Image 1 (cartoon, rainbow, N blue to C red):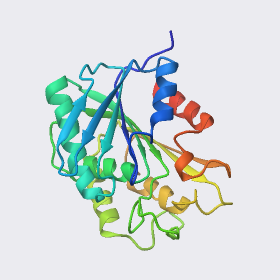
Image 2 (cartoon, helix red, strand yellow):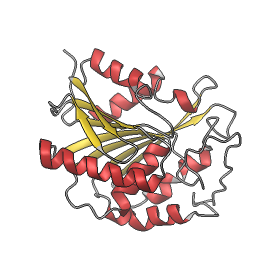
Image 3 (cartoon, rainbow, N blue to C red):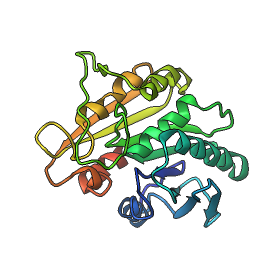
Length: 244
């Protein structure tokens, strides 16, 4: 039997994502017995939350699926807050980890920094995959990657109102939270094909006051934005982070 985790993992997909977004990673986690079961939580277009496979344990994999994956970061953040509060109140989940891709990572961070939700489980560890923290339109499926310019200290030279809110609200994060920021580089130093390296690296400045921040740039032409949660080498690094 493989070593299991001591808290559930919540998976948050990116812009226009869905059931298949984290299918490969969750399958690997179950096969290697890091998690015992998959819990599916769907959010309807109107925000109605439905939880399937209702036995949630300390080693469950909880997959959140937005039926409208093109809602704003702010709206997704509100829905995530409702879900996390429900996990604590109805299922007794006191602590959990998060793995989030792209826009989903921005929405999760918005929830933790800017919502006045007191009854959330403690977030122990967060894995961010290809997240556009400094983009004007996080997740928008455009042909052009937003070119974010950073100062020598890693601060965006032009900051969106959302980014400023994330920075201001960062004081609300638990000092003990651990964050692993995985950034894709599939086109020789600029982006993963959808999100610029600089936009993803802008997370460092947002979290400069937390206890632990780790950053990894994955340079591989075959591992583009959509494949960050499917690559075996990235999977191994995530497992090492969660278990240690």
